[in-house]
Image (cartoon, rainbow, N blue to C red; front, top):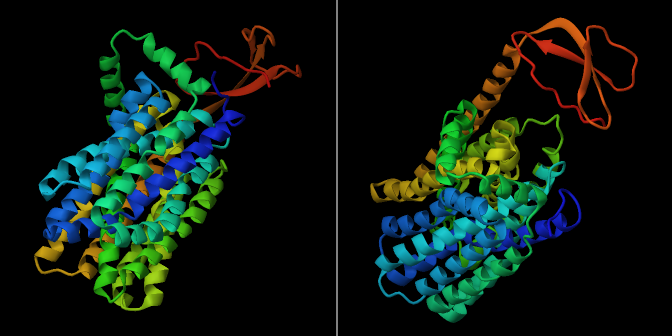
Length: 459
């Protein structure tokens, strides 16, 4: 049984996506606490531990092509359940390894790929189930990414103090297993089934996938968006990994750090919903909004080190970081659809996520590199702020490019009407002057445009 867009079971799918984002939100945005747990258990250097955390977070988005391939071949339900099993297994194994080198495999790769399958599927499934209210639905779904850190960060901090390292990762594995339940709710939508039918009719699926990706690569607008997300993700996950440790260095306790991350979480919960609702209007340019979000967060990041010793400044930055860092995911589906269309949605999101994954992998080790070679956390935050502003300008360039393309087409004054048969939806005649018939439509013909077939759906 399939679901219809914007109604019925689609809203239960949305609730399942919210639940998935609650789990993923803790693992992603409270990753600094996991980083501290690894650092204390293995007593390794900052750069090595940071690389492990960065690999885990990089595969969250870098697994986009794997997720899109599984979704196109099977379904969102299969991708979510498979990702949940891989993530849970990787986290449990991480709790019992005795050498930090093994965590590259268990936590970085196995859990990271599982994390990526869950995260990307939770985003893509919304686009399959919503059309008119897509941005609002995405905003509601990713608000779970704020609820997760808000609720679970203090809880798992207490779990870590009570059950130590192994018990902490064992319970994290149990938490990740809940995504199997959420994945079971992801009943295929009519849009998803139509996509699967189209894919099943193709004889050379691999060649078609390569062809789709090549067309995406040639899109200049998509390249600007990808570059913007690449730069932003370098900064955002640098901040999330090193912000807790930075606070500890400025005389905050671990419980105070967990409270700060909770503040970031609840801030993100509200702003993501509001951002999605605001962008649901056709008068709002999603890319222009991203420019504002990334630029404001970048300015706040540059200023924060000047006041990092003050508790008030830590609270304000936690609110800013949580509120602005996750807004971008509310409009990812709409941006990709506007540039590439529904047909290449899964491939487009997967391609974008590769850039995000590379940026995520670079960010945390970049801060570790700065620290190892005589820099400070303040220096790394300065770099992060500059990169965020650059990412915002890249999104702004995409908007300007799209407007430039839109204005290139000039129209002449030739007017004609198309009369359509209401039942057959076929063209009956084309006239040069507008008539007063109810089923005639006034159109303007662009210069040098050949119109072969026009389909008209009478409302």
